Length: 557
Image (cartoon, rainbow, N blue to C red; front, side):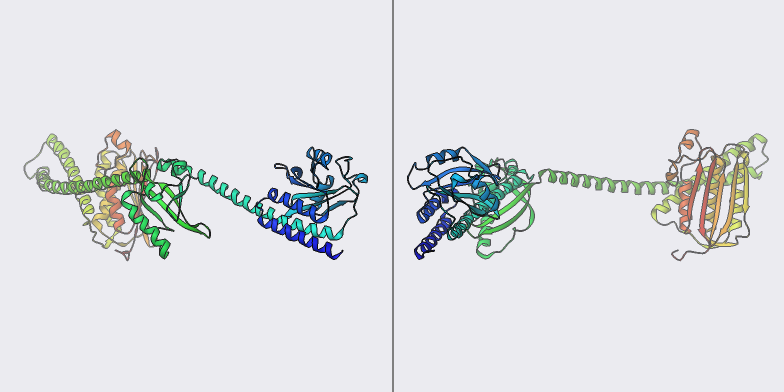
């Protein structure tokens, strides 16, 4: 290649580089590059193709042409404007597909030049402009006369395409930035939390749809206003301005990068509670941007206040109930003590009368005194139960554990209930397996617990039934069982059997005697021995209560 020719092509590359550096869009660079190439190479016309807006695999004319003499290629321009080429089709499509220059030495004899016979077109060359591996444009040039391929020119043209590719790269980068910004704006607009941003000067730069609802101000009204005067309550505005200034001068953060609860200002002139999360981002060109997500917590605060008020009322109610419970317990204990003394005198005099020491009784008198005595015993048992419950509630119900003959305790319980069983024509059975010997127990309270279970069996077994009291040793425990073939207990009521004052459906319906304290006291006594009480019952077939207590005093008692 002649030296002058080489210098011209180098100058062409330099000019293309300058154009590429100054242009922001391929359309802006197109005409200057076409002109520079034609002037440097002597080609008489140049034209630019770009991908279709919707079909990137198809190329259409930009309408950008350079002609050495205007109108010299009028027929070619008309044929070009009517066409578009897919990848691999025609000279432009083939160059776009391969990413390489395509040179047609003689258009008149070429089958790949698809714009038909065009007057005064001899040779054609097309070369791609690529960006990120994709053809972003195709430049084509024409001469009036046929021309053979020029290797040096093809290399320079390839370099020109690379330089223009930088313009396409910048376009793609800007488009990505714009797309990212639009995408972020769409995301923020769809966010349920309000998003606001301000610049270093305190002016609002971003305001999403949720912010419009939260603060009552449209985006158009908000953008460009001072944020401190728009959403910060008057009482906080001075502190807000000082905080921003402090951060900009010293970098000190007090609110930034934290989530806090604070008051915000509504455009209608009132404060409301919000949860605020803020952070700052610095742009080398634009400086600091302060961003915040704002969540209106008015409803949450109302709910919290309502819950707090309800809790206070509940605490007051519980405190009052405790006071009433204490008063009830004190009343029961006082009344029970007051009843016990005169009742003891009544029972004592009854015993004198029934013994005959006050004179012989006729059958009618003896029968009436018997009824009075049984009811006095019922009343005494009720008073003892009430006093026991009062002691339990007061925390002064203590057991006196000592070596106790289990067989003797069971026999005394059996003897205490036998008269009641006989009146109902029940068969009361006592069966002790082996020799249980002595256990660590409070004999009086253990006998009381067994009597309660036996009385329960007698009361809930139809006349003529059977109530069995059995005992056996099971390793380091003893098991005492009271079994009857009575009415049984509804499964839904079994979990409440040991609740104080609980009376089952059958007891209420049939008016069975009792205050609902016996089983509760029994459970308290057995648990005081370190044991437990189990119940197994089938409606219509009977009930079994099983007491399990350790033979020796548990270490924690």
